[in-house]
Image (tube, rainbow, N blue to C red; front, side, top):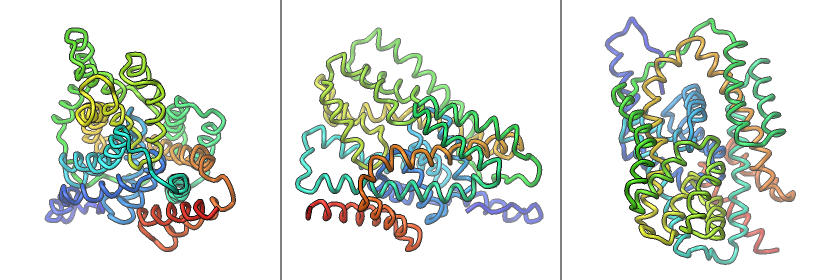
Length: 414
């Protein structure tokens, strides 16, 4: 937890600043792997799981810091939940903490998708009930995220209005570009309408990434984006073709995993690397596994006809599609502590945070609730899961298991 720095006590400054990275890489890996194995429901639900784990339970970041990181991750292309986890891992345990956070959160989903590519799609009796239970528990997780974030990020008439307006726009215009426009509009409204006076919370933790490292990350990001297509035109290596296509998808997609679908489909299906039926089957499986939706790339890399495929192909496509998010996170974090304390930026960020609450609220209805709450018993399970998270403070993974088990039992006796 970040402490207010006292100028009168310089002897404590090093202690306070070092507390930002006092955790170990193995600690980050353990927590991230648990989240990767239990975070069902897609990127919006992941925010709820992350808030519960990293803010409430582990207390690695404060609620205000978490909200800022959510806003920053929404601004950048690529998988938002992965960028958020990488940021928290870096703040906790430095560069390798970020690697551990990405690896742990991604590995369970990637393994499941590779197994599915090898034909492990036969889940046995009760599979439908289990999968439906995972959707139901996502309703409770997202509801908790909306509730907890709204209490701190959408208070007051102005911020509350921004949140409600964002939800209305997202529900009335449910397209990917709308999310980007809502976030930008929220920032503009915050900059124009929200007060800039009063105490500004200063980031006292040390960002364990140098500006030189950030510059190198940006050079690598754009350098690969420019040179990979050139190399692909010169050489005919299939591995290079894979890396270029999936790296480009991870660099240019705003709006989350669902938006990457047409880019990847245009990359792999017309070339005959995979059939359209296989493509859609894998995408359906990606909705049912925990962790980031971008591990759909793991399935594609493993299921493709030309080599490299299998585990090697999955490794290439997975690294390629997530690498831009990692480079962007390293590039932007050193600037976070500089700009977040400026009054104008703080007002802009408050508007963005309020808009994010509205986006979460809209997502709670669709696609989360509309795909999960099909009858009264589903709503009852969601309410019970919400109570387990809020009143009884049960860990999210246990609530996931309990809800999925109950749903499977209900389906079995019908």
